[in-house]
Image 1 (cartoon, rainbow, N blue to C red):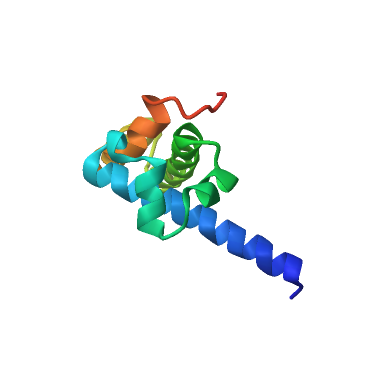
Image 2 (image 1 turned 45 degrees about the vertical axis):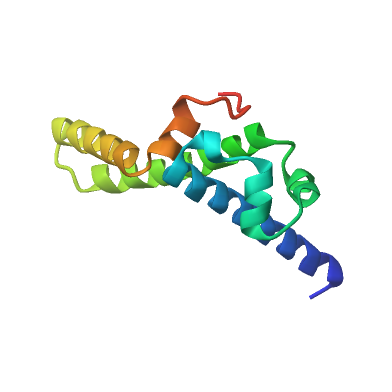
Length: 120
């Protein structure tokens, strides 16, 4: 493994840590509690390190929203795959959607309520 590959891997790991920590903090205390200062303290990196990955909280919210969209899509696909017929698929889809929102309210907010800077 080259030095370049190692640095890219470490950078990706830091980015995942930032997103996971933001998500955890938002689920525990709400999005108002998610600040770059608090995130930096929690992950034990400086604020400039966070800014080298994301321009600010808005982009972090966007990253959480993208992660959540992937998870929700996986849940919906799994729920509808075993359903027999169109009515059952729609009901399974609705249950999976609502269950995801109930289990992940801060992620749901990032996806549908907050400005994460994503163009849909």
